[in-house]
Amino acid sequence: MNVGRFVVGIFGVVLLLGCVAKQPLAIGEEERSVFAENELDSVLIANKESEYEIVIIEPGFYNWLITIARPEGYYSQTFLENRNQVFVTNWNNRVLLPAQYDSRLYVLPIDYDPKEDYGYEVNYKLYNYFIYFQRRYNQRLGPWVPRL
Image 1 (cartoon, rainbow, N blue to C red):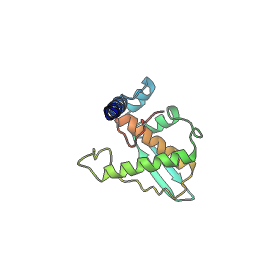
Image 2 (cartoon, helix red, strand yellow):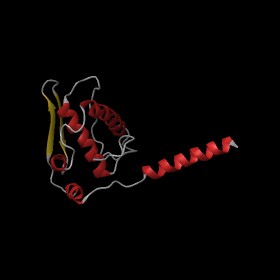
Image 3 (cartoon, rainbow, N blue to C red):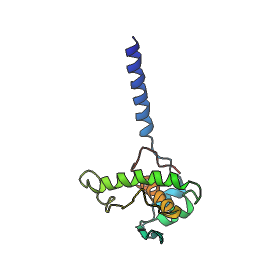
Image 4 (spheres, helix red, strand yellow):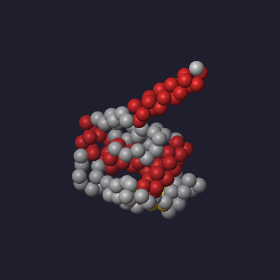
C-alpha cells in the first residue's frame, strides 16, 4: 500500500514539473517591441586585464540591455559566473549538434573558462545576452526559466 502512494506521489511531482516547464514566458509589450527590432546593433563584452572579448551582433540586444535587463549590481558576480558556466556549456553543446539545434541560432562556440576571472561587467553582459537570447528565441539553456 505504501508503494502505491509513493508511485502516485512521484507521478504527481512529475506531472506538476511537466506543467510548470511548459508555461509560456511572460513577455511584456516593451520587450516584444525590442524583440521585433531588425536593425543589427552590437555590444562589445571585454575585459582588458584578461584580454577577453566577445562582440554580440544581435538586433535589439543593446536596447534590451539598457531598458529591460536588471541593472548592473543586481546580481553578484558569483551568481553570474555560475549561471554563465551552465549557459556556455549548453550553448557549446548545441553548436556541436547542428542537426539537432538550429545552426542559425548556435553559430560559434564560446570560450569561457570558469577558473578565469573575467570581471563583473563581462559576466553581467554575457549573462544578460543569454537571458535575452532565451526569451527572444524561446530557448532553454539551463534548468531555470529565463526571467527578468
